[in-house]
Length: 106
Image 1 (tube, rainbow, N blue to C red):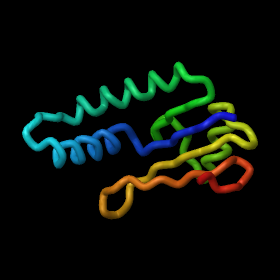
Image 2 (cartoon, rainbow, N blue to C red):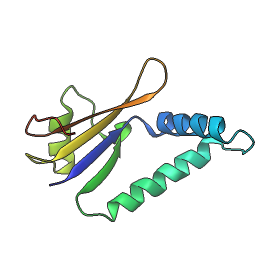
Image 3 (cartoon, one colour):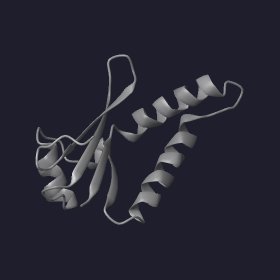
């Protein structure tokens, strides 16, 4: 069983991470570019793991059916788990997880 993490575009996730760290560590300079580099490291480290995929929205084809795009482009199969992060109206990231068999993941 594979696990897919679908995140918003890199620039949005990087800005959210930088904003969060600036609140926690106000005296450290944390440019967004540094966060983008960190995201690249995260994605690369997951590529070394079997069956774990970190994808950014700009890497997934546009369209209404995320599951079909994951199957067509990344080999997702029935029973695989998907966690999608979305940006809320107040600028926070929220997650929704499910299996490709339609069952929610807890």
